[in-house]
Amino acid sequence: QVQLQQWGAGLLKPSETLSLTCAVYGGSFSGYYWSWIRQPPGKGLEWIGEINHSGSTNYNPSLKSRVTISVDTSKNQFSLKLSSVTAADTAVYYCARGFPIRVFGVVIRHYMDVWGKGTTVTVSS
Amino acid sequence: DIQLTQSPSFLSASVGDRVTITCRASQGISSYLAWYQQKPGKAPKLLIYAASTLQSGVPSRFSGSGSGTEFTLTISSLQPEDFATYYCQQLNSYRTFGQGTKLEIK
Image (cartoon, rainbow over all chains, first blue to last red; front, side, top):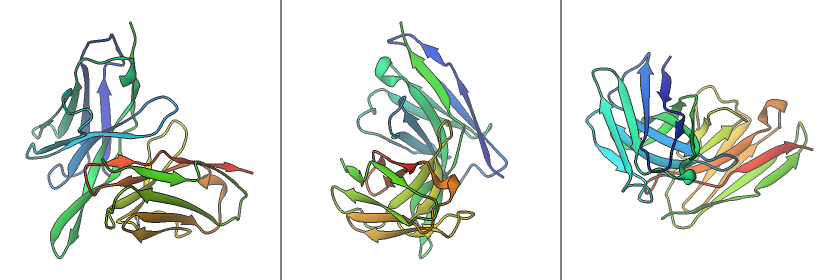
């Protein structure tokens, strides 16, 4: 059974860089996309971006200038960096696995079926 | 950007009721839509993907339908454990979520 375990600093000051890592246990790392999603307190979900085992990334255009997602296949881990944080970046951050859906053998999309438990990140001076 | 609008935002219902939540996209997204259930303090759980495919292990009282710009999630007979917040998500262009529908006990 695949499990995602995530960790990182929970308290940041404005202008610092948020850094989180998610480790994948009990399953394959290749063939999937690996995402970061966040949820501000009392609000809805926001997709941040995703990466595959080859390092191909897609980012939310609204965050793209500040986001870097990277992968370490030797450790089955992927990481999120978000620069120049402000109070608006305060949220629970989740990592998730995107599994492939194929039509006639061609992968068309990756749906998020396994999620980490979330890491609370607070930005405060 | 593709916007998703869920209705209603709040829903009060009783155990055994049939409920339907609607998700409307600002432009056509084919069938690239998922539904998630989230309980307080927990990560979202995938219920439905590709608009109408039930995720493994999800009870059959959950069903999804729709394509293009209008989608629905139906729970045929509410159980106590179904009271939660539900989100739709589009995967046609990048990824965006609806604002959520909170399902409460009447």
